[in-house]
Length: 300
Image (tube, rainbow, N blue to C red; front, side):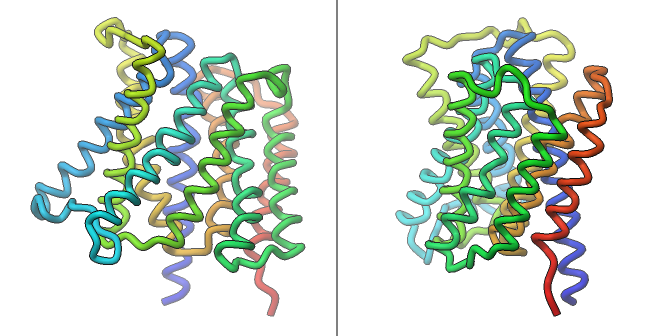
């Protein structure tokens, strides 16, 4: 039974990282090439994704099944999904889009954003009683070094946009702590639907003072393809699988696999954008795999 559970976890977290990795080059394309405003495109993307997820739940069950509850409390359930929507969807993804809009490359933004397991490991030590061991710290640092080597540092490493990516990383780690401490009665699918919908609403509201506007009819063919991809696999798929993975393993272990996201992001850039394969990718990939083995290794 445990072996089957481990296999299910590995499959779910790998699909999570693949879908998340694809969102960086596609998001960069929409913002940089199609000139879509960063907060507005994020808001529309996540509102649609959230409506789809909650709508499917209503079709398969009933309207009452999507009423958010936490510990049988509707008020607490609504407060939880609103908080996670603000932190995870609006915070993490909103800051990411701002980083991309301010000139940070998709590679560098993924490096900064996915340092969140390090901040999470520190927070989990105090709030989740998930002891921060030397092995975990070593693995996390090795993973970060591997991702940095894999992608390669560039001139966008230290600019104003990188601060947005770092803030997004902080939001993600805080969000994970909350989801592990506060229960949600409706399951991860409904939970994800609400946090995407409400987070999208927050992003849309944040875009109003900035006077962001865009005629989506101006999107080209590839723009529509990548926009739909961001809504279905990269939003509905990735976030649903992410919360499912969190329920299977500890927060630190699950987050350690997220080091694969920048790797997949680079691979998709090579395939889709015809970027050259580098020695950095090979060496960094070995370092990342080694970090994953180390953080999941159990001494007998």
